[in-house]
Amino acid sequence: MSGDTIFALSSGGARAAVAVIRVSGPGAENALAQIGGRPPPAPRQAALRRFCAPATGEPIDRGLALWFPGPASATGEDMAEFHVHGGPAVIAALAEALAALPGLRPAEPGEFTRRAFEAGRLDLTEAEGIADLVAAETEAQRRQALGQMEGGLYRLYEGWRGRLMEATAHVEAAIDFSDQELGGDPMAGALPGLAALEAEIAAHLADSRRGERLREGFTIAIVGAPNAGKSSLLNRLAGREAAIVSTRAGTTRDVVEVRLDVAGWPVTLADTAGLRESRDEIESEGVRRALERAASADLSLVVFDGALWPEIDPQSAALLGEDALAVLNKADLLADAPPAAIAGHAARALSCLTGIGIDGLLERLADEITRRYPAGGAPALTRIRHRTAVVECREALARAVAGPADERLAEELRLAARALGRITGRVDVEAVLDLVFRDFCIGK
Ligand code: GDP
Image 1 (cartoon, rainbow, N blue to C red):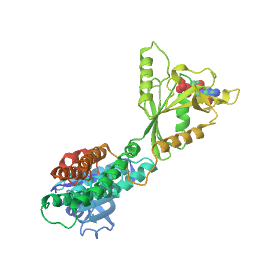
Image 2: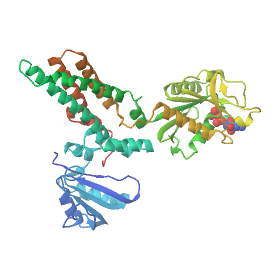
Image 3: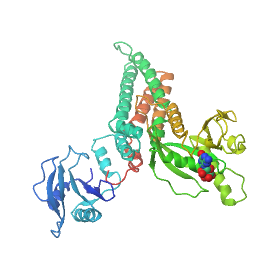
Image 4: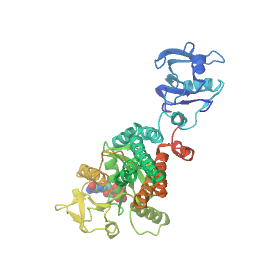
C-alpha cells in the first residue's frame, strides 16, 4: 500500500451548503489533529470542531470532523473527513492547509476506490458499480449500478470461477491418479457440470447487450424533410417531465441533442438537418450527418409533414425500415382521419402544435426499448471488458467440454477460470487496473 496520504473534495464542485473533504492514508490522524485539534473524534462519530490552518493558526471554518481508523474504513486505511461550508474559499483554504502537511497530496481520479480495491475491500466490478452509481441519471441505471456495487456480478463470476476450479481439481486428480484406484470416476463427475455451466454462461452473454446499453444509453434520431416539424417534435418531447439534461450546442444545420428519461432508460434524442438535395456545401454536410446519425441510431423517428399529406417525401420514406418509426406530424391540419400507415409502414399521427399524440409516442418509445431490452432477474454485464473476458471463458470451456479428457482439458479449464478472474481482479490485476480506474472522477 502507498505511503502517501491523499485528500480530495469528495462532494460536488458547485457552491453548496456542505462540502466533504476526505483524507486517506497514514497521515489522516495527524491531519485531523493539526487542523481540527485533539483528541480525534470517537471512531465513526461526527464531532463539531473549529478547523484552523496549522501553520498560522488562522481559523478556516467550523464544521464536522469524522475519524475512520483503518482497516474498517472505506479504503482500508486510516481516513478522516472534514464537513465544511461548501464555499470555494473555504474549500481552497482547507485544501491548502492539508497540502502543507507532511506526506499529504491531492488524490488522483479514482484513487480512493483504487486503494479500497488494493486493500481487498471490494473487487473490480464493485468498484465499477460505484463509478456507475455516481454517473447514473435514471432509475434503471441506478438500479443496475447499485446491484453491481453490492456484488451482483462479483458473486456470479466468482461462483462460476469456483465451479471451474473445482472441476479442474477433479480432472487433475483423474489424470494424476489414473493408474490408481480412485473412488468413482472423477472425470465423469466433472463433465456434466461443465456443460451446464457453459449453457449458463451462454445465456448470460445472450442479453442483447442490455447492461452495456443501459450504461451508455439508447439513441434516437429524428429525421425528415425540412419543415416536417423535427425541431418542434424534439422540443415537445424534451418539454415533458422526461427531459433530464439541457440542449447540447449545435446549429440548425447540425445535430442538436437532448437527453430524455424514457421508462428509466437514458435516451439521447437527436434532431438532424432536414433531408433535401442541396447545392449549399454546409447544408449538404448537414444532410450527410443526418443520414449518418439515423444509420447509427438505435431507432429513427421519421417525421412526415401532415400539411402535405397524402403527398409523402420519398427521401424520408426510404428511411423507413425495421429500426424506424413513422410519425405523421401536423395532424391538426388533416381533413380526414389520420392514416394508419405510411408507405406500408405503421405510422403514428400527432401534432406538435396541440400536443395530441405526444404521450402516445413516448409510450411507444418506452415499449420499443423494453421490448428490445427486457429486464431480467440476473445481473447483466455492463462493460465490453466483462464481455471480452466472459467470451474468452466460454470459448475455453467449450473446447474443454468438446475435447478429449486429458491434460489439455485441465489447461482449458484453467484458462476459463483465469478469464473470469480478470473481471473481478483476482488475477492479472495490473493490466486492467488503469483501464478500470481511468473513468473515475477525483474524490472517489
Ligand atoms: P423542421 O424543419 O422539421 O425542424 O420543422 P420545425 O419544427 O421547424 O417546424 C416547421 C414549421 O411547422 C414551423 O412553422 C412550425 O410551427 C410548424 N409546425 C410544427 N409542428 C406543427 C403541428 O403539429 N401543426 C402545425 N399546424 N404546424 C406545425
